[in-house]
Amino acid sequence: MKKFNKSLLTAAVVGALALPALASAASLAYPNGKQITFAKDLIVNDGTTIKTPADLTLTATTDDATRITTVGANSNVTFKVTLTDGAKFDSTADAATLVAGFVVGAQLGGGATNVIGTPYYSASGQELNFTIQTNAAGAMGATGDFAIKLNSVQVTNLVQGLFTGSKIGAEITAQNSLGQQILAATSDLAYSKWGLTTTALASPETTKTIDVGSTPLPKRWFAANGAVGGSGNNGSAADSNFFNLGAVVIDVTKAATVGNGTPTYINNYDAVAANPQYNVVSTAQFKLALSAAGFGAYGNNIKFSQAADCSGAVGTAAAVGDTISVTLPASSPLLASVTAATPAPSTLYVCAIADGSYELTKIDDVTAAVEVDYKLSTQRKNPTLPPVKFGAIGFNGTTLIFQNVNPGGNATAQSMLRLTNNNPTSCAVEIDAKDDAGLHSNSAKMVLGAHKSVQLYGEDLEGGNTSKGLTGGFGDGTGKWYVRVTAQCTNFKASALNRNVNTGTVTDLTAEKQTGSEWLTPATKLNP
Image 1: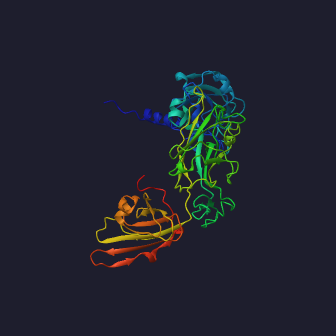
Image 2 (image 1 turned 60 degrees about the vertical axis):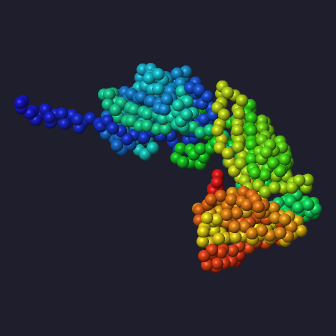
Image 3 (image 1 turned 180 degrees about the vertical axis):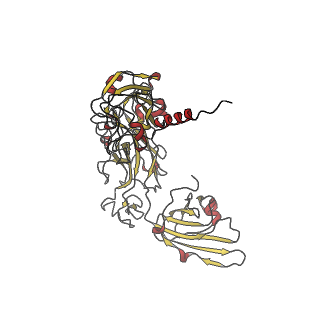
């Protein structure tokens, strides 16, 4: 065995301690307030090019203090910038011109950017390589000092990162003149989202209802105050001729800026343009499909308006079944805001119009689906927009609430509802409920004849009973039911009982009956 040479070991250790560690905790980031999200609609193929925001900044942190001081005055520092997620530098953007716009910070000596040799792209365009010569020695410097600040970068090959995915990144390394890595960092370079969004605006109608007491015919007008007869004679009361169901709001997408600042409109192709925000091309067509159970009864009396009072309403085609569809060009006044070069949201109020010629129908909610066809297949991908829901129209007749209604499957406690129509004409009745799990049931419906009564049991409410004229039903829920009875008439009464089938004991639930104001419809259906 050879004798161990302690002097050689000592020399090796000393030499190693003199070298900076290869790990680096440098920071690579945009300054706060930058919008770095682009419209996914732009990424038609890998030939699409974007210009990223400027000022992506590499900064040495305290962990880099030893390494940064290995950079002497008038020495070379070599950088490699690598794009991730499939992105590449656009080869048509001259690398030398790009690097000439970079700013050397005080941490690497500051002063003019002295480029050594010719910057170039490598790895099929994935990498940018360049070398600078410092004007002074490297130092951590004061707060706010940095190593290098990049200019806007022209990037292509974006399908993987910004269309299929939602981001591309960048990695950067810097080496001193001895070939030692002194700085390394990564950052997200750009994000993507669809260029348009749709949201729902809730109905502003807080008291208005279909007036079951409208004259000369019932359910032909709306009562703005919610009172039976509130529409006046032949709809003479103010605002009895329309119901604002809410609105579809179409807007260019906004995203949070760097540092979680206030969201701003996302970028078009060029993030450093004077007006970088995405905007809609003039060839675009917007198709809106509005669906709601009961829309068929309104025919072509569902209209759009830019005003909350439904003034200047624009007509639509008649409903096909319970769906109303309309196609609007980008030039439509209804879309003037969202299609402007400097965009703003377009709010399309959905209005049900009453004119006394037809019977109004209850609407539980409206589903609005928006499809956009840019008609520009070589330059735009059509966005995918999720449907939105809003709106409900109810009657002002009689609404009664009953708690503790047992399911039909309860073999011991049997619940029953007794309904009475104290009118000389028949009355439409709808019964729905929510279960102990907070889910909203389907409805059971019937028409109760003049002066008639009917007794309904739990199994009737859940599955219907055609012999009693009851169709539909709640379905199977969890636990007990919280039941709502909605009658499209006044002078309507109801009572409820629970009977113990073993002891015969009867409990009156009528004392627990409340008015309809106690009801709030759950968003989640029992039987979606």
